[in-house]
Length: 252
Image (cartoon, rainbow, N blue to C red; front, top):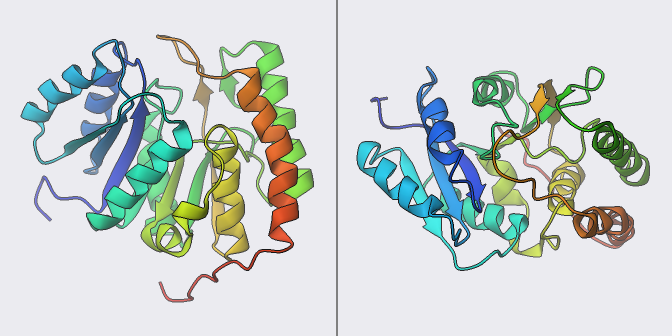
């Protein structure tokens, strides 16, 4: 494998991430293992895209970008990224935030869980060993922690951090799931993807990480996103009673 090729792509959706984008890209590219990056840029007015374009000249074979017009939602950004990644034959496909709340240094640990230890999906989990969050207001910590507990209760998902957005998928997971059938666009998208992978019979493993609240820019979390998660989960569970999930093939 030469320096520029990789079996792994990290999808990073961006909307107004001018303060973070260059730093996060350089941090991923500084890792010992070679990762490629796909930015899904949702028409940020702050010039995020032009920073990425400049960096593409420096990393032409490792840094890719899909530009979309307007904010179309996190879920649709990832679905676009998943399809692109499958078309470009990556074996391990990651989701990561641009704002350093997910530490790029944890990417090799998520990779190892899938590539060496047999997981189909690995999740950077804030709650698998207590509550590992830094600089969050207590209300937000409790909301997120109990949201995860609630989701676990309703869905039966054997996962502590059900809303985590830091993940690695093996290619076959995204090939098996009907990506166009994923309904949720916002926060509940993360839950729906895990729930669907679980229902298909894939092996999901949690890797403990420390989540650090963003230092630059503003959080995209709001109560309507939270509401989607609360009611969406009930809908997700009820729909699952009538839905036939494709089964994971047993080959590796």
